[in-house]
Image (cartoon, rainbow over all chains, first blue to last red; front, top):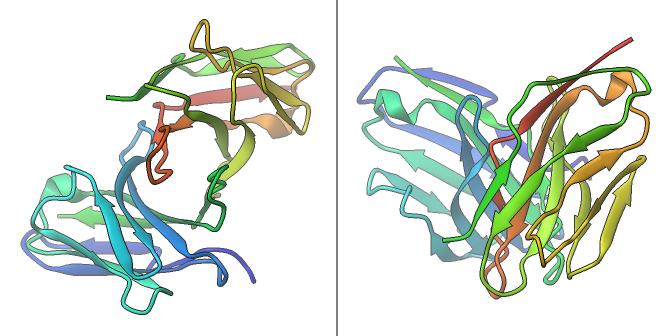
Length: 114
Length: 113
């Protein structure tokens, strides 16, 4: 396995459009996380899945954001009616360790909202 | 809520110099502590971790000790190389939660020959 992959790597969109990002975790990992990182800041937690169940959502995840992991494998993150403030790097991570939480990160999807 | 504070960068050092990047945290209970590194053009990578008080994490010559009495997890390396130039993030995983990570703002390290 080559690690966590994300698609697309870059997305440029106009304000008001909807965008969807995909994350493919390491195959045997049952835990999947989404984070958002803005320039000069550390990643901020958005949401967490264990298998197909979404178990935690941050207050950062407004009603315009929705995430799914329908079969407990890949996940999608959709942003509706994008705003300029949504411009950021969206990171996906996966993990299979309960105690030590060793998360493996993907390369990220950079979103630019014009 | 839980949070992480790390020293502002950039930190600029000459090759073979000693490195310290300070990290302190606020958390309830017994969080796990991590250092992640982001090399230019690459994704975040776990550098080292410590899961209980007085544990020392180490990897690639870097070390950090979990100090509960001072709520700190400072990153150190005895002799830095140009290849260590990167952004370093201190992070914690809250105690008793779903293992999400809470990150500091990151510290950029630049090592010159």
